[in-house]
Image 1 (cartoon, rainbow, N blue to C red):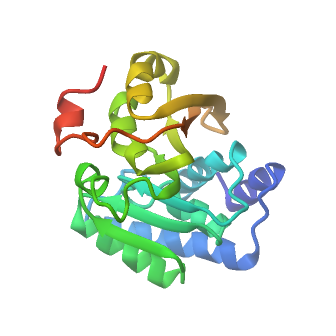
Image 2 (cartoon, rainbow, N blue to C red; image 1 turned 90 degrees about the vertical axis):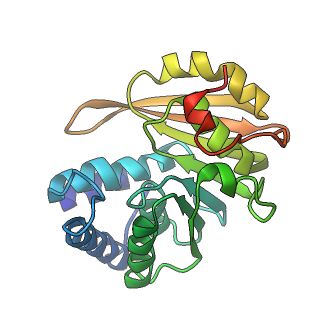
Length: 238
């Protein structure tokens, strides 16, 4: 994906970027490649691929959800900052919190935020399981996002406890989302969630399947969730 394609395809979806935002994306790409030489952030470093598979893919959540408003967003296990930092660049009014279990990655993200002059960004080195049990963060966010390989039942246990009642959990998945949802349906209900919609689309150029799953938080999550670190992955809720 070239820069021109990136600009045009976002414009087609009603997302218009100014020169400052485009410069932020360029600098983000440079920092990603630079830091990737010192630590493992991503296997994708080719510019056209970063713009397609990281930047455009991250912003695709905004094709199906209105981010043009002051919202609090928590990104669980964001890795190199996806999807939350591309969304933050496009929608500067977002108040973004990122939780990641690796201190080195948090150091990278703090550096990116400083270089890109991103205000209202907060970074926490923590496991999602312990972070979501802290009173300051539990059920505090309008939106919680995850763009991760973990199964939907696992992601739901890590993310739904952070969503405030009336808020949404947005999971960004590749293929097999429908199958995962069937298995996770009971877990989502147990955690206070209710499936709202699933949006499927094809990532341009690469032509690969993508799914945006939106879960509404309809009631409080029982205090016992999330369980101790590692447990959701080893023993997913059924």
